[in-house]
Length: 274
Ligand code: NAD
Image (cartoon, rainbow, N blue to C red; front, top):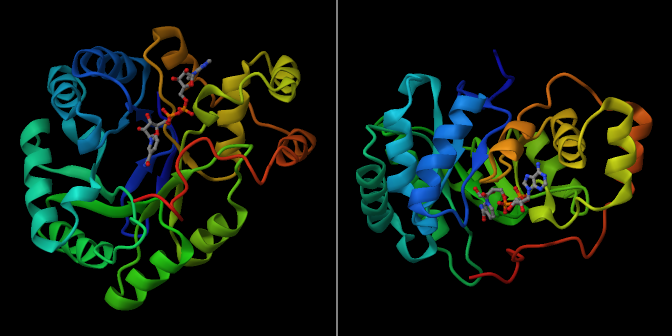
């Protein structure tokens, strides 16, 4: 069945629900990614630092789904930033994945106290020009980082992958994205599991016969975001993409909007992370 995609600023289409594989071993990634593709996912989010590009690549090669129907993301880690080292890090990622190209290559973190992200961004532009990655973007960037690379190169990232969930709604940053044609891609869309027990989601879910996780993911979709929930449990992998047959009403959206919290972060803060 057809799943919704979002149009990126370079014309490519990105599936709105993808599969995240942080803290998943190569063995588990092989199994989980194969299961996810079987369940209908067409997008996988990995990174060189996750140490599972080999397993992800094996799953991709073993599936009957054609490569061009899949959307594969990987990222350059902090210790490889800079122009030449990023080009080499990209080659190494492709070798581990055993792929000819990726669909999206991201700068994993801006790294506080370093300006290397500016040369790293130029390397990503080169990789896109050479057709080795279809799209390029960033992750964990704040407004000043985004503004700087746009001003310096004239190339706007297709996406910014950031921590975003009902307890950390990132309204200022996502408004900047919207104004600049950047897609907001949410990591930790379920707050890494920590927000699922909030009664709000169970209450809303009962109206639609949906689980708390499905309600949260639907909230993201209704906001126009891309999500990449992670699970290695087959039933949850299936649940997390079974979110296209209902829609939250205005009252549900308002109740979830009220959960936004100043202290809502579950992951590192890019303002201090290096
Ligand atoms: P997540 O919000 O996707 O939560 C995952 C956890 O939630 C699982 O481990 C499980 O415990 C629980 N869960 C998942 N589905 C469930 C369900 N249906 N019912 C009940 N519990 C469920 O957190 P995440 O893994 O941190 O984020 C998703 C992906 O985002 C990662 O796998 C990774 O690909 C990416 N990510 C990127 C960055 C970055 O810096 N760019 C950082 C963290 C994660």
